[in-house]
Length: 140
Image (tube, rainbow, N blue to C red; front, side, top):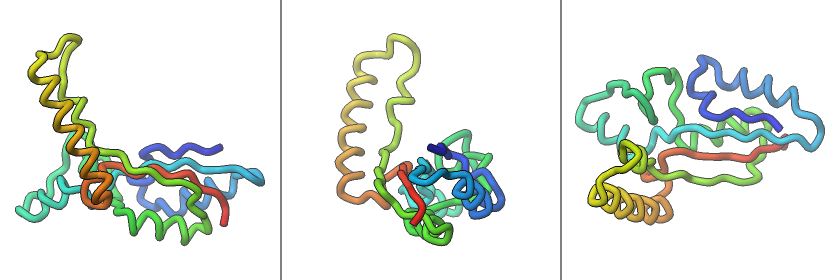
């Protein structure tokens, strides 16, 4: 099992890295990959208003040198002769805005509500509301 969690977007040549990881797989081995979704509403919105700036985290993290949508990451897998066994879509981590050990009940309730709405939107439109894509892969 090879785990490439939030790595491919940080390297200049992600195909080369992925091909190297594939070469290390034993027969029946798998690769787990997670990548942020550049097609998420937040980066799209920023670009639409002319603000392509980097952030501290998320799809626009300042350490990212590559950006992936669901289409482009799955094309990369195909180019590396990988087959998707399973994929999942993760919603926006709104829970991370609740600070401290005892967040205010109102704030905690609001975040829970927003998170529920976000999860419903992820199910309805994963390419726009999915914050991150998770994949389980094997050699094709």
